[in-house]
Amino acid sequence: MRGLHLEKHRTDRIGWLRAAVLGANDGIVSTASLVVGVAAANAASSEILVAGVAGLVAGAMSMAAGEYVSVSSQSDTEQADLERERKELATDTKFEHEELAAIYVKRGLDAELAKQVAKQLMAHDALATHARDELGISDLTTARPIQAAFASAATFAVGAALPILVVLLTPRAALIPVVIVSAIFFLALLGGFGAHAGGAPVVKAALRVTFWGALAMALTAGVGALFGATV
Ligand SMILES: [Zn+2]
Image (cartoon, rainbow, N blue to C red; front, side, top):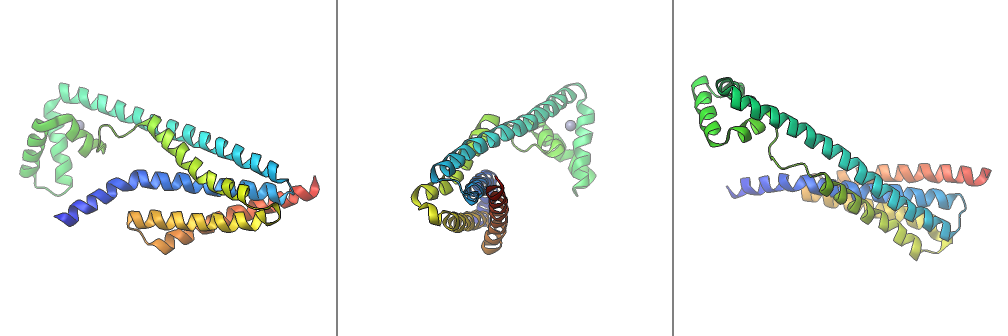
């Protein structure tokens, strides 16, 4: 039973961990790419720094707004579904019992047992049972838009701070290669850590994030060099 408990604990943790790793990952990729692009256009250190900091703020705000809107609308939909279910439970109890029993039959119980399970679970907590087994809402207080928005912005900012720190500590002449190499290193570390914590293959995850990070930086470096040469 200990194994079972651990496994469950792991899946619980993956939700917020995945979001945190993704946020930091975005912060590193977009800020390092921005910095490399501006540096490739022959900007001075101070201009590169301003671009990096502006990128941090813009990215964090955009992550927060996106997350807030997405989690809010998910929450609205869930609330509307629950409200409809609550009404149905109050007005048509017999139908709701049959509906739930039918769901359990589909999942493999025989009709008699399904009826009993539906009856006992509905006696215990009818709304929570229908929410979970009919609507697929497992936790009635899952969606927290403000918290999600803040967490996204904060993890993005932490990721974005890494390449900015590198810009602060590196002489202008060596800036581009040092930002690229350090960003790939941070990405590999973060990807590996996220995979390890989630019980997924570590090397595969690290390679995947470094590939996309390297591609992003190569593209902005190319665009930056192009613009730097023409303007
Ligand atoms: Zn129902």
